[in-house]
Length: 249
Image (cartoon, rainbow, N blue to C red):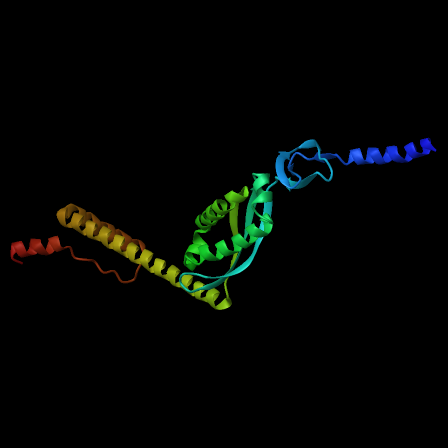
């Protein structure tokens, strides 16, 4: 009879003792409470938890990638856009992440949504499209400051998409086309200005050197002869007219 009792009791005792042990991976920590009061953070590896007296909350220390749902944002220049983002964070202090906030994942999600709307609403649409790196850093800084008391480190924030309505897309396309036309006109005007400057410099050189004008005259005659035109017009140099005027002809 006693042997039968031992056969039943011994497995129960072994099973009870087995519940004392927990195995945590390298990226896990256990926040241990003794009779409801915080005791210590344990892990990784093999740890001992006394059932009933002690309770354990397991925390994952790996980086968490959280999608921020699309948010309706009105920019500073009154343009309505729809923006979504992704937030990278990790638990740095397991004790704070358990004690200071009830559900840190939900808290960071809500905080990210409100911060995204608040920050982007302070900027114009052109800044949202052109300065994403600056906006990402600003949002990351705000989130990191807010979550520091929770033992959470926000490492990076990336704005993924900025969706515009069809009317705004057409307006931006027209603006881009007008900008391209303006640049083309500026480049053309700049080319004309440079050409005019070169012609002015050439005219000044020719006026100061009569020999250069004669060489240019002979080159022009040579070019006309190569074209095989039926009618040839010979330009009369101004120096020749001056010669006849001096002779009184």
